[in-house]
Amino acid sequence: MFCTISLAKELDGKGLAKTYCAGCHGETGNSEQDKQGVVPKIAGFSAILLFDSLDQFKHKDRQSLPYRLKDKPETTMNKVAEKITEGESEAIAQYFSKQTFAVKKLEKLSQKESQGKQLHIDLCDDCHGKLGSSSEDDAPLLLGQKKKYLQRQFDALSEYKRYMPRRMKRKFRKLSTEDKQALIEFYTIKTD
Ligand code: HEC
Ligand code: HEC
Image (cartoon, rainbow, N blue to C red; front, side, top):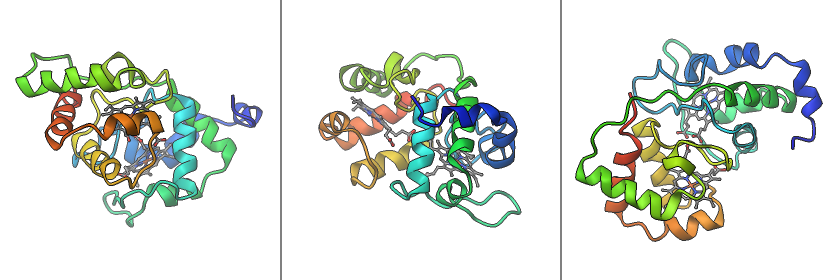
């Protein structure tokens, strides 16, 4: 699928991930150090999606918010992605795709969460499969994602500041503000 897949084989994805990503996303991509809820978990996302996301950040097709890691200077995903080569991105993408996205056990759903679940089944599950816990169709995992991060992405998507596939746009457009909040409540039931 990747045109330069042979490059990635030579590289140590785990080591590269540790050097470039672990400070914010953790060694397994579960972003556990981030207590603000703004650094998304990326473990278990498909390798194609991870590679594409890095590519979008690198070429500024997707703008990211700035983030400061403790005593380090503030930076963005755009700046991080600029520093790594295509081959390195592939190796890193493959490494994180093999990690497990950590989630809490499913709890009893509130009315709002159930409403979000139903909306997800009706409109979103054909791409964000298994209730948002499968990245098989190269869509991001949603169930168990960080809340503030998701809220910000919903805002960016609602304002068309972020790319989304046309088929998603057609469905996303139908959502009311209340629907979006219910979806976010549902997606974050399994979040630590
Ligand atoms: C300085 C902290 C920092 C570092 C280092 C960092 N990231 Fe990020 N990453 C973030 C933040 C913050 C966001 C959310 C950006 C936003 O809200 O726009 C993000 C977003 C992402 C996303 C989007 C996830 C989604 O759900 O769409 C991916 C993929 C990603 N990072 C991968 C990586 C990889 C791979 C590396 C290493 C090469 C890396 N990041 C290094 C902080 C960081
Ligand atoms: C046609 C398949 C498809 C459908 C249907 C779809 N999505 Fe998506 N969604 C995607 C893809 C692919 C992306 C990644 C876009 C990118 O490249 O940045 C995405 C991204 C997202 C993101 C950003 C997540 C992150 O980690 O940054 C959210 C939130 C989201 N979708 C919610 C929804 C909701 C809610 C619905 C139903 C109303 C929906 N999607 C329907 C394919 C789909």
